[in-house]
Length: 338
Image: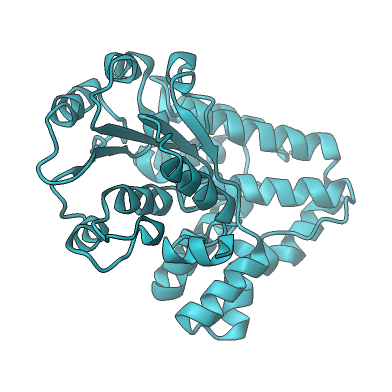
């Protein structure tokens, strides 16, 4: 059976190599107690983690068919109602994964499985856990219960302590090819070709985002508003940018997807400034991108890209959110031309 068919049996698209890697570890009896899956938001990390949990606890008599998707265990894990599948919960106000939550999951993962081979704990947004909170997981990683599997999900490994990464099997999920996303949308979700083509390009390789946008039209409208906000900010003076920073700082959680989107915009501008020949990902903004690139130097585009990336990283710390955005806006082009 080829890797593509195996990946589809896991309901995972675009990451066939990761599915094959995990299947081999199961077949060879080399399942690790901790995995760190990282990659862009909505690229498929949680889908892979959940499918892995299904495969580990599938009750089908033929191990080669795990996960079967038909047994009671598979159905309940897929629906999120399995007693041996645990999810951490981030703080609803700050988005942080707090030390108390990690300790709570630690205490529950230590219990013997109610009915399965393994108890599996999935930690969403583990890169939103501060160092002290991450430290709370170390004892479990160093002396894991024989039945426990820990799966940490993160956008990048940069904010993860070396003591965590060194004790985890790392799986890096990269953006999915636009053609793969297009094929999935048209073949599996009956998207019309123009919409599938648009979503495949603007998704940034994030299949989960593309699927959400396909079924929720508000997603594309929100994206348009977020890009409008960036383009408008570039036309304003320092005071108006500071006012924008004040408004945006009121919802810290909304800043993460916003700045991730702005990162893709600045990458497009940089490619155009440097004339790399790489097609823009924000295809519906191509005219505006080309116009902006004509007025900027590659150094200015790179500075804006780095400022946005730095702001994203800083948001995971205790730094003042408004000041973080103000600094970012000061590094955006335009002010020197006032």
